[in-house]
Length: 139
Picture 1 (spheres, one colour):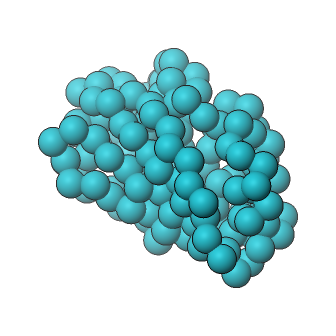
Picture 2 (picture 1 turned 120 degrees about the vertical axis):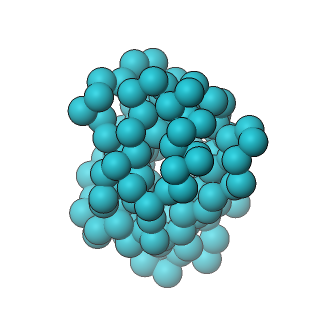
């Protein structure tokens, strides 16, 4: 099952956080938000389809997010689900390399954080590029 969302880059995108990666529906970003790579996202965790959330609530589920920006090779971040995932936050979604879970957590045990993304993608987003993200959940 998949859901496509859109977001935009921002002049303050840094992409330097070593354990998380975030998309937010907020339109602004401060320089302190070093894990946020996209603002004005069309979806948050809470607005993703309930059927996807149910699939993600299994430690056996596979979750991926494909990040696509114009002129940059697509990048896929993969992780897993967990029975404790709530997908309840109305503002953001956070990809975590750890197993920490809160209402904003989209996936845990991810293979990449913001700091692991190619600099070509981060630079494009810092310049305000559009971002498409395809969230996929499978058994």
